[in-house]
Image (tube, rainbow, N blue to C red; front, side, top):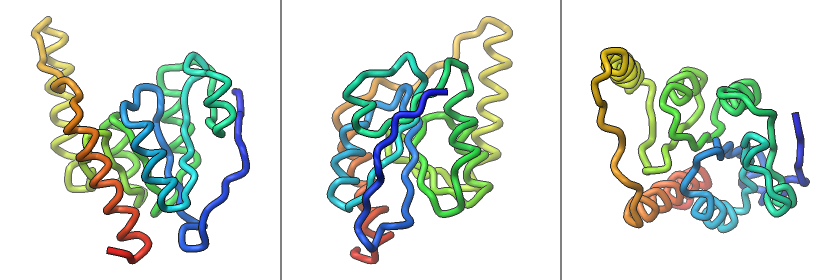
Length: 165
């Protein structure tokens, strides 16, 4: 496991707020930086070592050895209730919501405990279709509107956390 971390500095109102990012395929990294900077929070980006760059290491990213679930397991083992996680891995999201973690997708959807049955059912149906060599439609292409919506929702979540809204 490779650790590249800098000291986390946060404003007083957000000193206990942790924002974890499943960064391997996160399309909204810049938006996360922008919103977090505005609120005085340093996000914790977690990625496998094949996403390593010196710039990211200087920004305090945590890099893990290769492994299909390495990032998920790291996040699961380090989050606490009331932390925020940004991920597009809906199975991970289901596990996190049961622990009282707030989960936001890069498309700006806040995942709730009540979404678990639907998420897991869709995963099961997708796996069954793939076993039968049937095509399963994936998500639409990521657009500028998706980025803007994510940033808007994330901004509102952090503002509400601070009691600004």
